[in-house]
Each structure stands twice: as structure tokens, then as C-alpha cells.
Length: 324
Ligand SMILES: Nc1nc2c(ncn2[C@@H]2O[C@H](COP(=O)(O)OP(=O)(O)OP(=O)(O)O)[C@@H](O)[C@H]2O)c(=O)[nH]1
Ligand SMILES: [Mg+2]
Image (cartoon, rainbow, N blue to C red; front, top):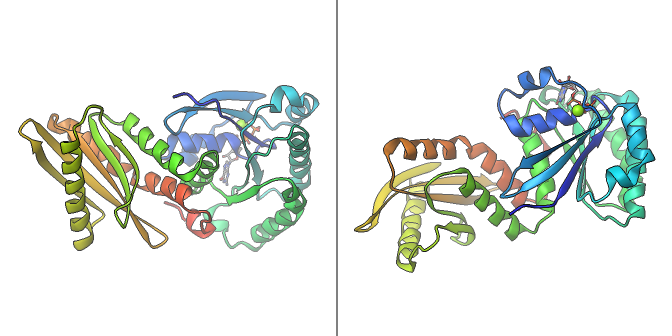
């Protein structure tokens, strides 16, 4: 499925927009990747695969001449946007006024066009070591005050992000994307996306702690009998994981004389609630299974952020800014 969602990242030059997108792509060693970034020339369009579909993102270079160009031709540049991330460098208080004016003009255009889209304000470069720095804290308060009038017409969400705490970025970006969907659709998209990134998936299921299924994928043509067996395996694995206080539990089994599977279950704790993701792979050579399980394991932190973004309406900023 291809989505026609158009996402824009706007903000002044040097605010960190391209760095944020780089962080979303790379996830690891982000500061090193970001070091050599050049200013974006006008608008860089790329597609960004985040869910089971492609999202078109527009990284708007923030140099003055470009901003003037966008504002002079708003229809050309700013039409049809479904979601806006507006990035402000929290360390650069001398440019708050300029950033505000830019945002104000963009929102005035959205209002005129009757776009009521989510507006995500990223207070960026809110580096973990500056979390309690009085200047930065004060800058945040100032911005909050400045931006208040804009809330009259728009649903505005605020996030503190830093490339030194990649999960703060994953959180803010995912949150915005999931605002475009309701919870159930969002979770199902998340499941479909994971399946797409792996091979040999027979089933992938997300449950909350009472065993209510939030999202599911089963390979086509799988029999009801086998589905039932998978659910029994899930119950067994969930029991083990709780009983033995584990984060993850792997197993293999035979579902019928012809069907051997390997499975793993991961547990997530989100605001005191527990969630489980069950992955069942069709039998394959050992290395393939190990690779798939490793992929699943290595992405635990990211899955956790995405689930949080989908499931929680509010998320403590402090937590997001903890490096890893
Ligand atoms: N301390 C700190 N520096 C950052 C962070 N994110 C980005 N930077 C730095 O900010 C500079 C500018 O980043 P870019 O991502 O190129 O900024 P941009 O908003 O895309 O700029 P334009 O393309 O000109 O609009 C780079 O030198 C980054 O290293 C952050 O979270 N913390
Ligand atoms: Mg850029």
C-alpha cells in the first residue's frame, strides 16, 4: 500500500531538520553521521519508509532566501501537507523571533486553506546534558509563551529532541505519523510493517497484558487449527515470561506433522502496563532463524518507542531525553 501522506519539516537553517531525518534513518552513531551535513538546498524530497507504506517527506532548507521563496509561493510549496514538524533550535534564542514569524506565516496559510493538521513543534538540540541547564529551561518557557497564541487555531504538540538521544526523535516523529491514524489502525500498520521487514514470518501478534489482541498478522492460507495452536503457544510463552520474569523467550515446536516453527516473544513495559509481541517463523535453516530473531531483538528499543507513541497520549519528556 502506498500512502499519499505528505509530511513537511520546516524551520530555520541550522535548526537540525536534516539531522533529525538522518537520525530516523541511521539510528546508530547519529552524531557522527550528522557531522558533515551540508545546508539543504531548497526542498529535498525523499520517501521515508516507516510503516507499511511510503511517506513522502519534504525537508525544506531553512536559509533565508529559501524561506522567502516558500512564503512568496505558498500554494506551490505548502499545499497538501498532512503533517508538519516545525523544528526550532532550543539553543539559539537569538533566532526565536524569526522562527516564530516563519511558523506564524505558515499556519496563517494553513488556516486560510482550512487545513487542520497536527502541528509538531520540536524543541531540538535539547541535548541530554542540557536538560536542566537554566538557560535552556528558560528558553523553553519563552518559546512556550511565544507560541501560545497559535494554539487557538491548531492542535499543537511539543517535543524536546536531540540527536544525542535518538529515541526522543523516534518518539516525536512516530507520534506525528500515528496522529494521522487512529490507534487500532496504527497498531495494525506497525505489525504489517514489521512483517514486511522480515522473512518467513508465519505469524506476528501484539497483545496487551490481559491477552487482548491489538494487532495481528497470519500468513495467508493458514488453517484455523494452526491459528489456534499458535494462540496456545502464545499463552504458554506469556506464562513463562511472566513467571520467570524474562524480557524475551524463545521456543520451537511442531504445529502439525508437517509444520515446524520457531517462535519468540518479547515483553514491553509501558507506563506500568505490559505488552507482548509474538513472532512465529516457519521452519528454515538455522542461520536464517537466528538472523530474524536477532533483528527482532535488536529492534526492541525502537519497537518500544513506537508502541509508546501509539499507545500513550502523553509521554514524559524526561524519559524521551534519556540517551538510549
Ligand atoms: N548539539 C546538537 N547539535 C545538533 C543537533 N542536531 C543537529 N545538530 C547540528 O546542527 C547543525 C545543522 O544541522 P542540519 O540538520 O544540517 O540543519 P537543517 O535544519 O537541515 O539546516 P538547513 O538545511 O540549512 O535548513 C549540524 O552541524 C548538526 O551537527 C542536536 O540535537 N544537538
Ligand atoms: Mg537541512
